[in-house]
Image (cartoon, rainbow, N blue to C red; front, side):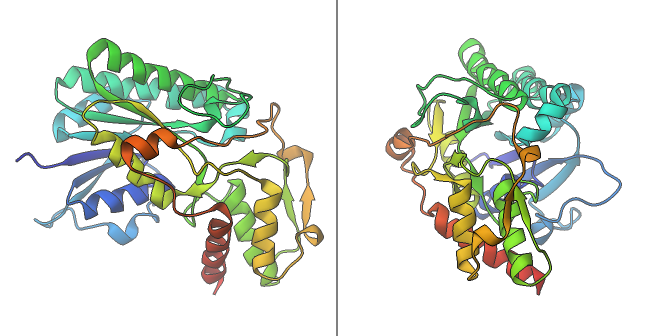
Length: 326
C-alpha cells in the first residue's frame, strides 16, 4: 500500500501548523515549504519538529517560495507527494491594498506554479487550494458554492484567479484539484495583526494593566468565525473524496467585530466601551460588510460541521493570550 505523503505550503502559518499536526496523527509523511529568513519563524510547529536525521522522522521542511516555479517543480519531483495543500499566501486583506502586485504574484501566479508542477510531474497528486470567503465580497449573505463572486480587494481578486485556475486545471487536465472556500477561522495561533487576535491580545494586556486602549477599524463588519483547528480536518476530507469539487466551510452564524470584542472584554469583567476606539485608518478602502457561509454541502457530502461557536472561540483566545502573559 502506497504511503500518504503530503506537501504543505504555508506550514508555519496558523492553518499549516494545525494541518501538519492532523496529518501526522493520520500517519502521513509531511513535507512543509518555508521561506528563507534571517531568523527562525517556525514557532507554530516547533513542538512537532523532529530531527531530520532520525530514521523515524515524518516531518521535513524545505526552503522555497511560491514565486519560484522551477523550485516548486523540482520539489514535487523529488518528494512525490500524494497530496498538496496550498495554504501559503499574502493573506492580510488590508496589506493587499498597499502591496497588490506582490499579493497577485504569490496568491494567484503562485497557485498556477503549483498546478503546473503537478501537471508536469504526471503523478497522481490530489491538490487543495485555500480559497476564501473574501471572494464573495459585496454579495449579500448567506453565501454558498453557487453565490456570485464579487471581490473587493486585491487579495480577493488574486484569490479569485487562483480559484478559477484550480477549476480550470481540474476540467482541462483531469487533476484532482479542489477549492476549500473557508470563511474566517481563528485560533490562539492567528497572526497578531488579524482583528480577532488583535482583540484577544489587547484584552489580555488591558486586564493585566499593560495596555490602555484598543484601536479597531469597522466595528460593524460581520463575519462567520470558526475554529481553525477544526477547519483543517475539512481540508483533508475534501481530498479523500473520489471526485474533486469545491466546498464552503463555515459555521453558518455571523457576528460583528463589535460583538466579538464585547464577548472578549466581558470574559475578563471589563466594559468594552471604555477601551475600544474606532480608528478610520484601519478601515479598508472598499469594505466587505457581511460574510456568512452556508455550509450545507460540506455537512452533506463531507459529513463535517463546525463545533465551536464564535463566542466560545473569543473566550478561548483570550484565555490563551492571558496565559501567555504569565
